[in-house]
Image (cartoon, rainbow, N blue to C red; front, side):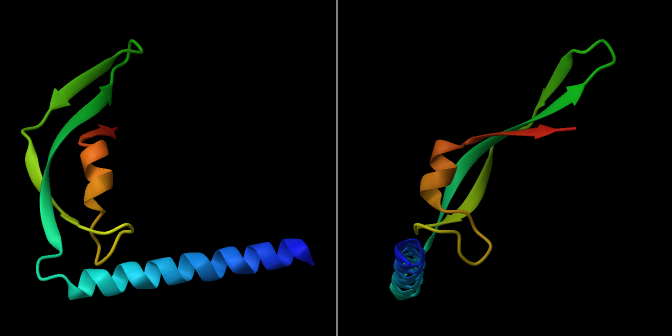
Length: 88
């Protein structure tokens, strides 16, 4: 019974945090920012080596929140993952 209470409590807490995050996001006048993201393609070759093709940096929109909202990733996450590798 105590494990069930812990799971239910965790679910309720996470739900309230997400709802509060959504409310703060909607109350902000400018909830979106942009982060410079550098992308590169990793292309495997026949001899078990990888060729890298670097793309120019782009500004990617992000949301100033704890969780992803409206199809955008949070800015804190994008700042920590500003290099994005695309594997083929």
